[in-house]
Length: 226
Image (cartoon, rainbow, N blue to C red; front, side):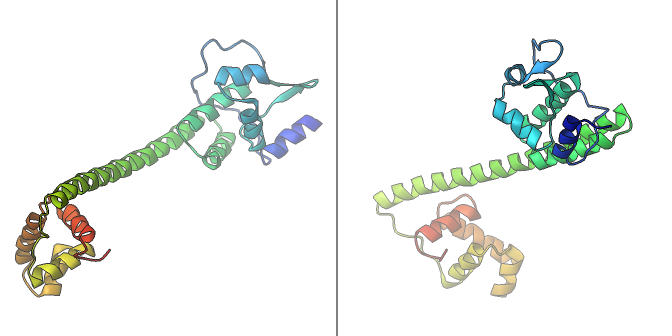
């Protein structure tokens, strides 16, 4: 027969059964032996009481009451280690909840370890994608900063705007729209090779090193619209 505390714990976890097999996750150094009171649990993992309450509300963790005191046994401590590891990687709460569901359904330690590694591998891919995006954005910012610095110097020297022929202006406008070389060639009714030469000429006239810088400079000079 379920106790009142057991029913409350089941309600907090959305009816999820207890986790029999937990993956190995790093535990804090100098962890006290035996069960931990909530204050000791918070200190051990470097979190606040509120964080532990939040984890319990979201079904990520359970606690047992000894009188008025909340305590955590070895299994709860190991589960906290898993949750803490996931949170330190930036894994969303909803994803951790799904992971715990899979761990609850695991019928062996191997199955639990596989579920944990799969979740960590997926998070690694997400972080790698974010890192790639950040690098690309940083590169664009650096190019813009280099360009604006060069533009200031040109403005101070009263350097005239680049002179473009009518066809170069049309080509530049299409470049600003993000058209690839092949599509610009069709729009201008010329060969792709001619467009490549034209693009290099335009880039050179703006003292730029690539398409992006040339278009950005043209926009700032008002030669093409945003």
